[in-house]
Length: 366
Image 1: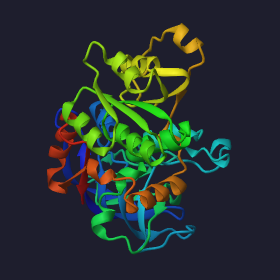
Image 2: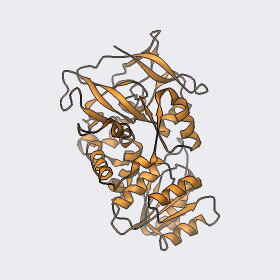
Image 3: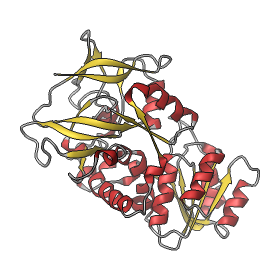
Image 4: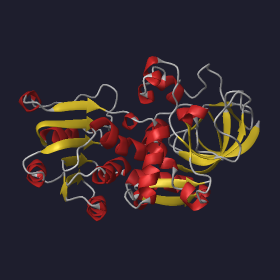
C-alpha cells in the first residue's frame, strides 16, 4: 500500500482536511499515478456538500505514471498523463464510440469503490474511505486508476504545463466537447452561452476555434463577462437585466444557431432556448438537482428548435484532449487564462474561492 496525503471530506461543515491515508497497490489491470496537480470541479463540491461518510474526491488529475499492473498495456512508468472519467470499455455504448454514455458510468464514477465494490482507500486507523471518484480520486498525492482513464501527453511536456492540464479531463473537455462534438458548430455560425464559468468559457474558446463569428455570453458576474470579452466574445449580457433575452437576440441577428447552457438553472435553460433562431439547437450541459423541472414555451420549441443533453462533451478523451492541447500550443485555445494555481496546503482556500466565484478554475499543485 502507498501512504500518502489526501484532502478528505468527512463532514461537509468542516470542508476538506489534509490527512494521511493508505492507497491499495495496483491490481493487474490498474495504474498508479503520481499526481502533479488536480483541478477542482463544481461536481466535486456538490458531492462534498452531500457526503455522509469519509471520501476523497477529485477527477481532473494530471501526473506521471508510477507503477502499472501486469496486464496493463499502452502506458508505462514515467509516462506523463491526464486523468479523465471512467468507463467500462465493454458495453455497447463504449464499443460504439460514446464512452461518456457508458452503461456503468454512475457506479464507475460515483460509487466510491471499484466496480466489484472493493475500496481502494483506508485511513490511518484502518477505517474505510470512499475513493475511486471518477475512477481516480485525485485530491491526493497518488491516484489508482484504469488505463481507460488515462490520456498520455508528449514526454517533453514541461512540468509547468502539465500542472494546468488536469481540467482538460473534465470541465474544459466538457465545454469544448459540447461545441465540437455534440453540436458540431459550423464556421460562420452564431452561438449563445449561458454561464461564464470554466465550462462556458471553454465553450467560447472552442466556438471561436471552430469559426463561430458571433458568440454572446450571458452571466451574472461582471468580472467573468469582462473576461469573456477579452477572450473574444462578440457580446456579453448580464442575465439580471430585464431585457437580457432581447439583448441576446439582437447580438445574434435575431436568434442564435446554437446555445450552450452550463449553469443548470431552470431560468437559464429557458433563456438559452428562447435565444435560438428557428432551426437552432441548444445543448444542455449544466444539471439541476435530481427531479428539477424546466418550463419551455411549446411554440418556441415547436417551430423547429432542438434540445440535446450533453455529458462530458460527448467526448472520447483520448481523441479530444490531444486535439485541444494542440490548439492550445498553437495559441488558439488559451484555457490557461481560466486557471489559478494553489499549493496543496491551501486546498480549502481553493475550494472557497471556487464557491465564491473569485476563481474560475482552481488547480491545486501537489
